Image 1 (tube, one colour):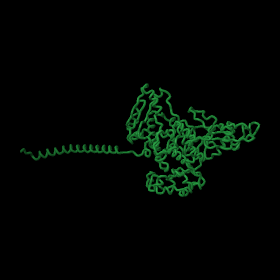
Image 2 (cartoon, rainbow, N blue to C red):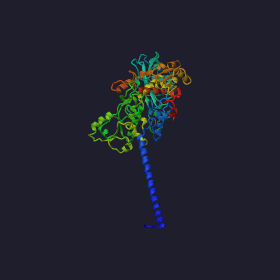
Image 3 (cartoon, rainbow, N blue to C red):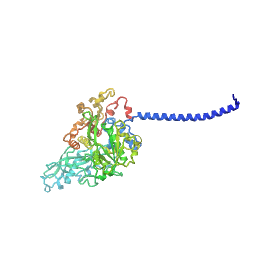
Length: 595
């Protein structure tokens, strides 16, 4: 056996161990890093596969200040009764109101009695033809001359004196009323004195005018809301000026005229022109660029879900500078229908202001689009770019030059929801254009009609009963706190005796509230059903939109109108803020709801 000296063996062994230790350490560190990487990837994959986002209606987010304000508005608990989860969704004009209602320094000034010509004359009478009572200059048997300035001034003065809870901003020139020659119709633009909303309202009424033997005019009576049909003007194309000839206004500046772009606000009561847009020519169609969303699981969902997804599509179209091809038919969720079944074939225009959308954004009805596409696609070699994965971001589509981008959604929920396109990194790029969606002007006209019949001088209460009142485990005190006796006790210190009280409620039997009639003049939504009945403008106009088939005033419409009337009360009492200590979403949820 070969022998080695101890010194040589020690030297070789020490050298081997030092090299081995370095290589082993590097190997261990590398293995550890790789293991950590694998664990991280595995954990991320598990989270991605199992993650389901919170309800986007309640928890939308965006880094921009504007979107943050909208998020706060949607999720706020200041209005604990009417929250977006179970009530009509807040739309563009609500965001406008929230940001601009506190100070209206740019508003046009209201018209007062002192502003009227000949304001020193009696508000009850005026002489005919400026004759100062000289009967030789007038024919007392002739029809009333509604164009007479004295008649005009008399009608304006009588209107201002009769409706003291509103401010007037413009009076239209009177026109002849009924066939008898003793009436004149006049329109005006106004806003309630205590309005928290940035918009205006329009009314037109019939004035019965008497003339004495000495040819002195006097107002005998003023008709109800929208009775002056001859003064209702059809909308003219937007060609600029000179659309107010013969009107009386202090001035005609738009709201917020000091800004670079005038603030567009609703005018409830104007005639509606929500006809579908039409492409002018083959050349115009072929040179334009379009975006369409097809399929998906959003159909027949609640209206909040529908709008959240629709606004994602509209926001992407604006980002890509494309026309959104939209389906104007809506499937009404069973939660709003009288049959408790989903109902196809509803029109977008029943629920939202398509005229405002059409005039403010580039949209096209899909039926019209596909007709034009069939005519010119092959001839003009129009191309289609198909996208079947919602994870393909709008940023990646920005360079697509094709005529049509079609996003096609599959059948697996929730990945086939349109709003998934606007999640993740897209949130910082696509802003939902809330300002483009307003409530239906026809529904808002019903709201205005109810408020006008109450002279815009009423208080309101929202009383939730129904299933919640029956569920004493989750709402142990609600039934007792909303009983007539409890309501009388609660309202005693909040609402003055004799006031008009509008009650928005899901209690089907409104006679339940009869005991309140001893102290208040109570009103309910169905007290005004003639405003959507067979003889109403709403009935005729929606029937026309629906190809001659009458339209049901469905649950969503009822909730929309009920909510909006409630929000116009001078004092507003909410169930879960003012009438009961129970939490809106059940026991022990108050803290979560307010956070």
